[in-house]
Every structure is written in structure tokens, then in C-alpha cells.
Image (cartoon, rainbow, N blue to C red; front, side, top):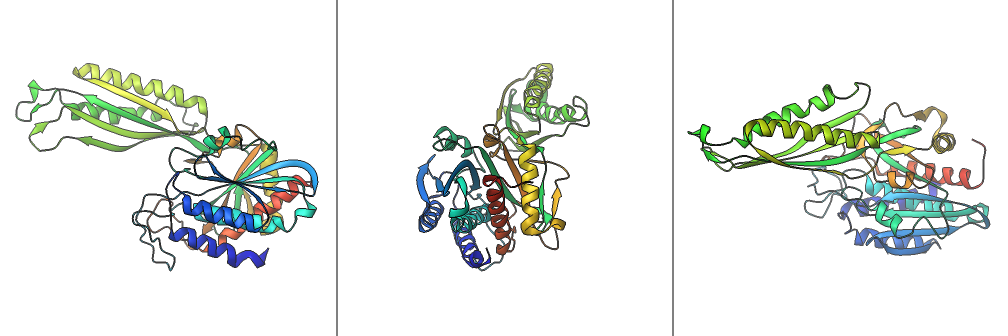
Length: 385
């Protein structure tokens, strides 16, 4: 495994220098496809626009496991001072997807040497647009779980709140379902000196925002993890005009898919009641982006057992609590038994994802490579866990 470390690091840092947004990962996809072909792996390109699938068939018949990495970057100006700093203005790999891509390519390097030992097949899935609308579902719709039929799926995420080199995984709910909502409060604009002749949309919006917090604090079981946050408020253009309307946008995160529908209804009851009381009107939209990530119990056990072999028993843990972040790997979990695990990258302090200073040691991506390779061999060859 160690002989591929330098190559995996080189790929990670090259991808980091040239980040690409969702469904625009053209350069990254070419690096992936070329690397896989050089390993003798069958490649399918342009899946869901920029997705890449590699297929490695073992010497003997058996099951098929899918290993997944995401390739897209974020619209963010990098401020970290590293030799491989982003060369693309206002684009940055600030969540570790460059490491996921390089890490899975490292896994392909390892497993291509074990082809004669493998019973079954390995699909390497490199997907676009995880940070935005999601590339996993479009790739599934284009048939990546068939020919050969996928029996299980695994993915790992480099994680800034976990100590470097540690592996954390748990069965059940692991990441939340993210939902986006928008609210438009429509009042009646007017002069700030004559407020009684207007319907103040800002005042109405203020009460709506404060009252929406009661969905979490008073309408939900305190033991059920839910997040409701406002991310944007836009209203008005000058100091002496009461604006006609206010635009609000935010997110709701839940671990149980059915919770989103209930919260949507509760939110609309609050918005409707407050706007009606002031004589205002509203428009409300609530969209689910991805379902929650739910790990299969046996697959989570396999990840732990396999990871212990390559990182050490003292570095593998049961994840203490799920993340309220979202992940479209969840769509794979809805179709086949799957597991999503975390590999730590924090050295002296917690690293904040989606931050312009997000920076970690490139060598850690190979910890992901080793885990995915061992998980694959153990799954396909039926090793006891």
C-alpha cells in the first residue's frame, strides 16, 4: 500500500489547485478516468454529466461492491497558505472532496494489484455536485447500480472534528436530511414617518423568524435532533422607506425523513397566523435536498472490523453522535446495504469545513484508501467480521 502514497498525494494536491463546481468537474473527471484506465480498470465517463464509473472485475465470480467519492469544490476564496493553493479565483476544496477523490484512486491502485484474489466486482463511483443539487441520484437513475448489480456500497469522509488517523462509524442515522425553505413576506410599502398607512413587512418577518424557533424548542420532542436556521434576510433599499416585502431563506435538518413533512406544516401554520394578524400575505416553499444517511448495521460492523486491520484497534471508534450535515450518499443507502464512515484529519485543533483556511495533511487521504481497500477485500471474499 505504501508505494502508492506519493502518487495519491500528488493527485490530491493537483485536484486542490484546480477546483471545479458541481457538474463542471471536467478536469477532475479526466484525471480520474485516465488514472483508472492506466490501472487496467474499465471506465465509463459522462455519467450524469461529469460522473465517472470504474469497474474492476475479480478473477472469480461473486458479489459487487460500490465505493464512492465526491469530486466537486465550493465557491469560496482560499486563504490557506499552502504550496498547492487554489489557482481558480473564488473556488476552493474546503470540504475534503479532493482527498476523497485521491483516496478512492489510491484504493483503485491497491485493489488493481489484488485482482487475482478478488471474488466479485468493484465499482468505483466518482460523483459530481454533492455540495449543491447532488450527483448521486442522477447517477443512480442512469443505471450505475446495474450491470453488474451492486450488492453493497461504502464511502468515507475526511472529517475535521476527529483526531487525525482515527476512524469513526455507527449503525443507523449518521447524517441528516437537509431541507431548504424560502419565505416571502408581502406587506404594503410606505413612508417610514407614516408607518400606520403601511403594512411593515420587516416587522412581520421579525416576528416570523423569532416564532419559527418554537418549532424546535416547543413543538418537537427535546430528544429528537432538529436544526432550524435562517441563512438569508433581504429587505429594503434606504432608511426612510418601509419595504413592500422581505425575503427569508434557511435550512431545516432532520435525522428522520418523516420529520420534515411535520416541520413544514408547523412552519406554515406559524407564518400564516402571524402574517394574517398584520394584514400581510406570504409565499412559502420547502424542499428536501437529500434524505438522511442511514447506515446498515452489518455494513457498519464490517467497516469497523476492516479498519482495525489497517489503522489499528486503538484508532477505530463507534461514532458518538450523528452529524447534522447532509450527504447525498443517502440515496445509495436507500437502494443497497451501505455504510458511511469518517476519517479524522484534525491535528492540534478542530478543522472547520467550508472555511477559507481549511487545510490538512495530504498524506491522510491514504488512510481512507487503506480502509476502503480492506473493507472491499473483506466484503467480497467473505471474511469473518
